[in-house]
Image 1 (cartoon, protein in one colour):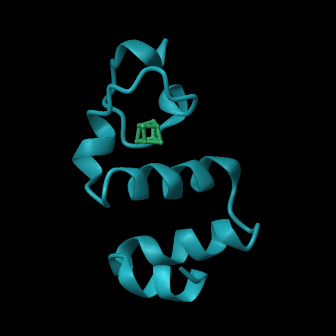
Image 2: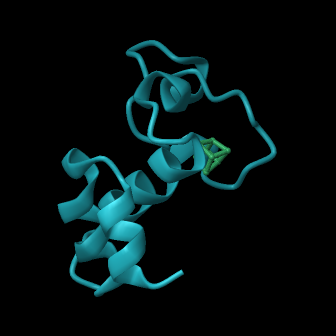
Length: 72
Ligand code: SF4
């Protein structure tokens, strides 16, 4: 799938950050955000609740709640 096709298919709210990430213009934090939201089918609450602790990005994922055990 091309970058353009993928961008067109995703919810518009996530498109700008995705395009910045794939062009090397996003911060590492925002690139992780782009990856995680795609991983969870563009459902933000699923990223919040992600319990895949064997994923290397888990401690860096966006949208965590304050007080998540992996915040410390
Ligand atoms: S931390 Fe969770 S949402 Fe992010 S890439 Fe890993 S499994 Fe997917």
